[in-house]
Length: 333
Image (spheres, one colour):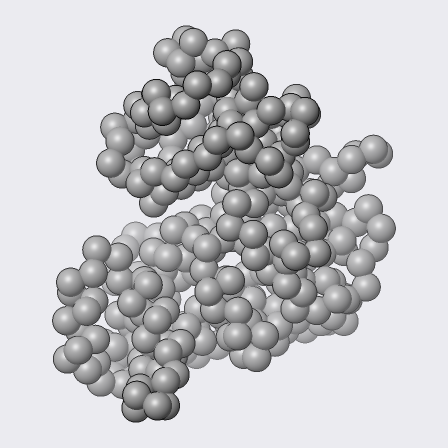
């Protein structure tokens, strides 16, 4: 049987698959907080101690670059080596792949209920496809047709230089450059990025920060869910409305994500479609549908018409990277 995993800076999903049942029917599955374990091996051993299946090989999608079978998660102090892990876990083989490569591997296997289409566009058969995924960090990848199936190419494009598209974003970049030596898209378009946008808007005097919100943010181990919830909430019966500071944070985030999704589509000529993954987009789907995402995506001057024909889908299935890691292992990719 195959052990597959989706390893992120916040949580790790593990599952065991029977080749006869496929990538949609794990026989065992569990989720663990990544930061509570000193290594992936320790986490896997904890999981395997609770199950009783004959595991022969493993396939892990990891949130970081994989080079020569070795990897380190960008937002977690884990180092991994395929060969060493196989010895430690007593498996015939261990394969490491970038988490966006795992998501890309699953794209051809998506079902209608796994996605929400923002624009149907005019997809080109066997055209290149792009994946952008804001979660804890920002991941990017692309797919090319290889004659019989799609091949996924990992990238670290989320760490490329942030390029502002309007005066407010220019001010955001200037604000962040005073606080860090490099401002990448991940710094403004991820779970780590949302608090940076919020801090800029708060400190620039866009709107006052209410006491209750400051207290919540100070008490939260991760401020991002607080910002998202406060920016989306709308309960008129209780007299609660979205907080203006958080609303502006989310709108800025959505615009930046749309612009970078359009950049990626141009760079890889994603005429087959752009897929937006990660943990954040499904949570802010109303903003992606009705705010500036598609406007920023298409605002590329002479190439606006080309991007107008590119399909854009939001991946709703939270286990997409796990499915991709399973496909990678089951099909021996």
